[in-house]
Length: 125
Image (tube, rainbow, N blue to C red; front, top):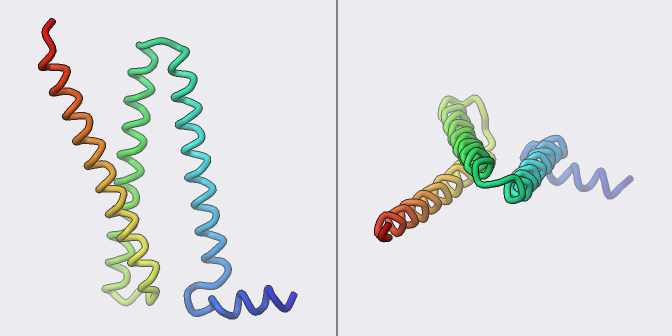
C-alpha cells in the first residue's frame, strides 16, 4: 500500500494515476484496433481479391481518420494551453509529437503507394 501511495505521490503534478490509467486505456484500445486490422487483413487474404480491395480501402480510411483525430486532438490541446485552460505542457507536447509521427507515417505510406502506382503504370500491358 505504501508503494501505491508513493507512486501516486510522484505523479500528482502531471495528472496523477488517473491520467496514467487513461493513457493505458488508450494504448489498449489502439492495440485492439491493430488486432482488428490484422484480423481483417488475414480474412481478406482468404476471401478473394474483390474483398481485399474493399478491406484495404476501409483500413486506409480508418487509418487516415485516426491520424486526423490525433491532429485535431493536438490542435485542441495546443489551443487550450495557449488560452490557459490547461497547464500540462507534457501532455500538449506528447499530443503534438503523436500527431507529427502519424502525419509522417501517412506521408511515407502515400509515397510508397505513389511509387507502386508509377511502377505499375510503367509495365507493358
